[in-house]
Image (cartoon, rainbow, N blue to C red; front, side, top):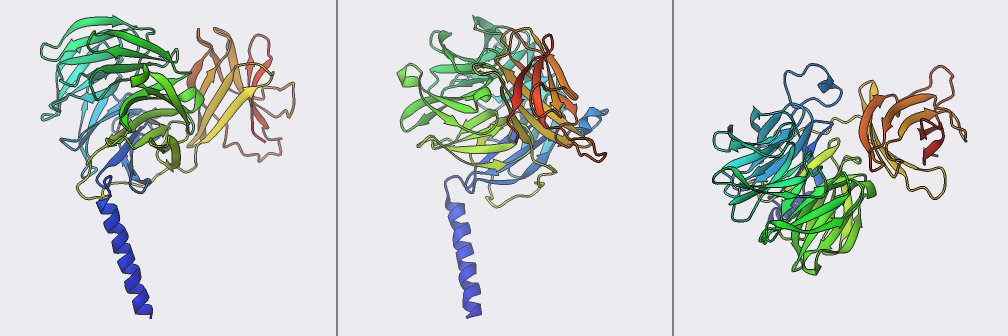
Length: 469
């Protein structure tokens, strides 16, 4: 009887593994570029499961000392199905790393100009165009040589590149200049400049049919849609605070545009066939950033920057699925079709090395009727904490201080100041600071901190308070 049970269990396991291998997504992978842990996370879309990480550098605070080896601020990413290669950009170390998706091995790392942002493969996959955001050019990399072969002058602070479907033109958005440059890919020259609504556009994406190109404006919470036939602005849509990334996908015979809105923890969905009317919004976890859809338009994956997770979304029902824990602070995300030959291969992947999970803290108005909001992602990094912060709805140009207090009720006394900043012209602030926030332990008998709050410097009046109990 015991022998029969063992044989039955073995057969069930083999049947299960066979079913996974036959799944249409079995050879696909989801990858994220993680800016705090300086790693690439690998997720299996069949099992919606974290498989492991590819380490590119030391996590914080290791990269704060002189950096001689390894990469820092792992941020941008693209995938070539033809070559089964990931191109990963690290902003802090000015590098592009090539990774084999079949073996999870680093093939080569090259170094280019100051603060590169995002890589994009040309339509024939012979080149990668990297936006060098700290300067004013596109770095052209030959994928066979894995070496820079040309630099294309463009507007100051190029954010990202996308190509028309025929590969003849490249559209380059900017992070410092309110324009999109259109580049002829044969002559490497700018043939047209399009004025857009704001100077901060970090992300750009082409539609599968080639008709549209969309770019995000993170600073003003908008998306601009360009018509590739007229090479002009077709429409500008208000999407919400901290608009991060945008993609197109054909979903149930409709061309849809999806946008991550970090300040509202939403993915907004627009129908291109209805003049880009919003048809849905999907609630996801903390600060959605990168996103990508499977090629069949049935699944979408979203990186949660403040949740250290990847969240799958069923595009047929527009419902979020269970999130998967990954590395710290995912930025770019790609869905990679046919990334692996062997679906069971996890060689050269390492487990998560995060000692503690990220704590997300929401700050709400103390006075009813205020539109201000705040969100913190607090991570333990060695002997201190990294507190990433987003604030919206504040008074433009007004200085504020984020602090810990031992007070239970108002007036709150700032017993430990975490960060001081000035809200921008739109009443927003997005930044980070280091200090003792989450990992404070009381060993001296002193009363522990009760709340995190934000106060206005000039009036000393508290504005926002956490929801911790």
